[in-house]
Length: 511
Image 1 (tube, rainbow, N blue to C red):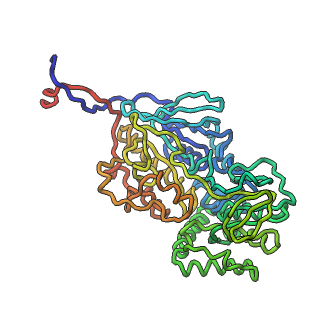
Image 2: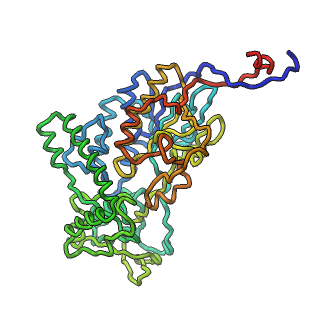
Image 3: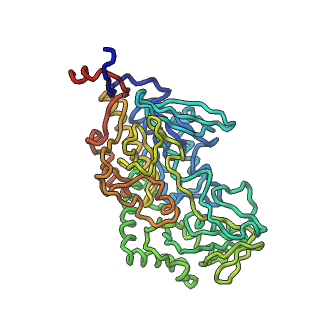
């Protein structure tokens, strides 16, 4: 009827075709883990991976500094589906890359990876129930691909730009300044005086690794760190591998290590008990060289992540007079090294600025839902991997108090459960529906005081004080919830492609 008022109403439509059901961004631990889980649990779903680098491995391909290694045991940093077969459980970067390459080759995943493709945009269209993802190649050319589900395995820090701790006089230094994220190939530091600024996991790895060839390596710290000493080899794991089938031995060791991590975390959080235990181990390792000022942090254990020291290598380098720790503040760089506020001067030929990472959310990808740019700081985590009111989207952010892969495994399995539910119910869209964010009680997303965490809180998604709207730091609880909890929980809303149709008001009323 001409002139009759109309109203718009959402109507279900047929979903538009896609290039693949699931597009995985990143071919590191998280992305490879998701690919294998799809093969195992959702074999009817097509998938592809896009990787911005020329090689797979993510972090383990990017970082090439001396001694690069895991800071978790490989029975938990390894995947649930693939036993770790090396003798060392604290593995170096090349061994981890070999593990990942073997997985993708044995499972024929490599041919599904498009290398040298950076995701520069992701747009969700509710009318088509699909993502359109824009890719950029090394020459600057762009292309697009479509997917029903977008799975982000891009890690949690900025690959392009590390944290820049500005030091006065940096331009005056006549030697070489290096950030571990961009380590120069074939750097010769033989006989050189090296100062490593920082006291985190990267610094504690680099110092003993450079000490054998360098004239001396000094770790310059502003604040001491809590260290945990453990053997690089797991004697029980290696024994079990000799007497049991590989997969059973791995499963037992993995269970043991998960439990020990949980017990150790809880024990360390009891401030006095944790401090005494960790300090005692360092005193045993250093003997008369123990310096209380250098090894007494102003925070409790696990307020920041503990730094792993395999086979006490860091402390052995100190005992051999190949390495040392200086606790002080930097006044400025000068031509020959670093002038400290105490008046001490550190001579250096090479300065390594292991001052931390810069976090990034969603791989810095501009994500839009029906044209509206997603501001992640305005969305709540759902089940530690999805986000309020963002459809068909998941991401991995590993544990701070345990191995990254523990989260990657359970998130991948959970997303497969969601995909299987959608197949069974004939739906194409799954959205964590949050109508009233004000009804939730927000909580600090990370109960950690680490600088890289605190610097990035303003860009991180929100965290509620209770499930499902939070990113938990409890693997055992998460595993139970995500493996056995109901998929259709009254929060995750399922539906199909939606379009707005205009109908006369009186006909709508008649309906």
